Image 1 (tube, rainbow, N blue to C red):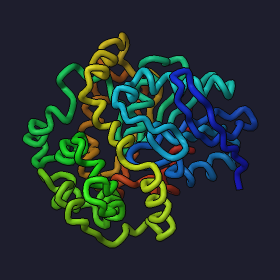
Image 2: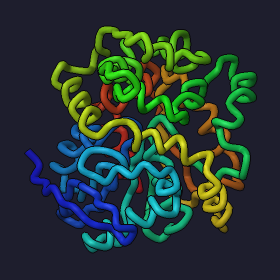
Image 3: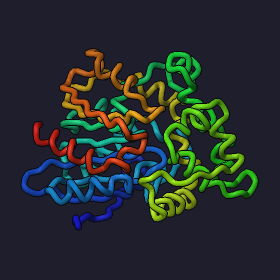
Image 4: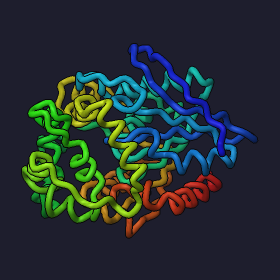
Length: 334
């Protein structure tokens, strides 16, 4: 068992972050792990054991809005420069000058802005499911342009986001609207039994996510999720609610995010990058990431791509052993 310490910090923005920390051994680098929606740092439990036992330093926070970390409900608090500054505060507290970042889902947004605003703190990056996200030009966010994206892809890939940014979404899921507990239905929505449910039934169908929650639909668990995993997610979401986590979507359409992204002077990713797409993920598609990492105006560092053909969005959970092996091999080549 790897020896990690649970720590907290109050950042310069007066936000409390909870994170796991393990100091590196034998001159190994420190890995910084950033999870996405609607996870906690628990997503990385397999990586903590695997890399910690091999001497790598570890910083594994509950990201803003989750777990033991602050849960602000103002979307403006989730702007990229602020999230990046929070990470720098954690690194400074631990005396870590540079990290190799590992990110999944919305965690890639945090890491991307860390690279944009504090490139000297990141020596290399690993992106899972979602690739590097350059600053977004004003009015070009994926929610505003979701209908145009649907025409290109062939289905309404970001339909769920249009509902997630409404005030109704959190109230319905949390049961504030009518007192009916829909957390179990929400877990089944986000962690589908079969990946095609997202495309054909709920997440990528106009009004599909809302209908799923309103009708309190349930399915069996995906093969990788144990009853204990389900109860963990249920407890975290019941205690924290969805108002803060859904701010990760809402912030995309705020003037603060538009102004913040416009401040980035150098948008290029110049350091080595490992990208692992999950080919059964019908939302976070490899084509989107490829359009970025094949564009020399956005990415100039060496890019390594390893594909997981049978993994859906939650490949970190279902294919952790394979991912760990690829990351370890890649780290050895840096």
